[in-house]
Image (cartoon, rainbow, N blue to C red; front, side, top):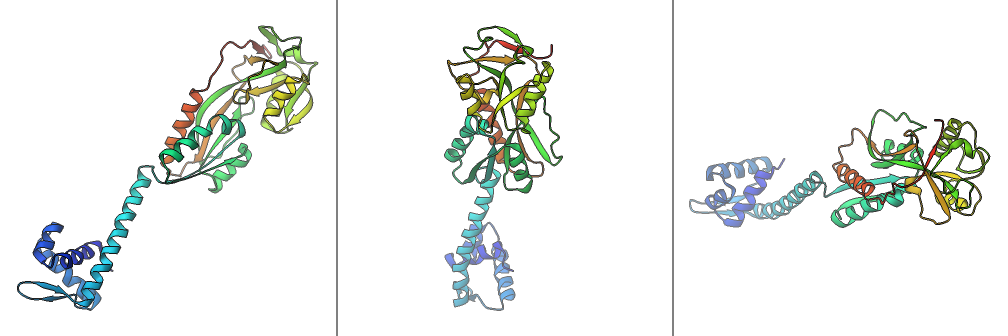
Length: 311
């Protein structure tokens, strides 16, 4: 099989017409270059040069091989450069998945940076909750997923996945501004036992989380409205149709809604990335770092009144 050293030897000898000059360019001795040419001729069974005491002249076969050698070496060098770009995380694949609110508040910064600074990276995005994106990561359809876990609804993730915490976001109780509790600085959850509740689809972690929090307050919520849309609970509360709990990433500024921050440290939602532990993708560190930067840049208010359950 032809080797890169042999290909470089015949390319330089044909280009210079001299073993000595070719050897100088390659950093070899003339004898070493001559041995490479002779080895090529034995391997291929064809004479590549006409030799005389003062010169070497390529045969038709030698000239043809020199032309092909130039193209093959150029392709080899381009391939080496391409592989080095993978090693420096300027080429590769990042297929990213995320749930809606992180996709809205955190992911755009990642997508924008990769498309701007790493145009040779195959960047794609797919929205979905963890029950959709985690199987996609395991199966290799996604490389990295942004997922959540409520403090009251912990999960046991597969062992072959790596989790990295991005942020821990507080949860907020939303009531209409005309609600009897609006304007208070501190409330107990039990005071909401008679209210109508707006929640997410039954069986979802957010719905289960609501049930656990209300149970700690001594009641089960009377849920009249359920949705998969993170925006809808806020709008329904704004219209005075009930009360709801939403995570920080789903919060919307509105003068028609009064918000209480849940005071129990367990009443949070943890946002993490998940990837296959065996995947050596060098793009992960860049993506995770950018997600954390986006989380730190969120405009967070600290003056919300407090809602307490079960204390």
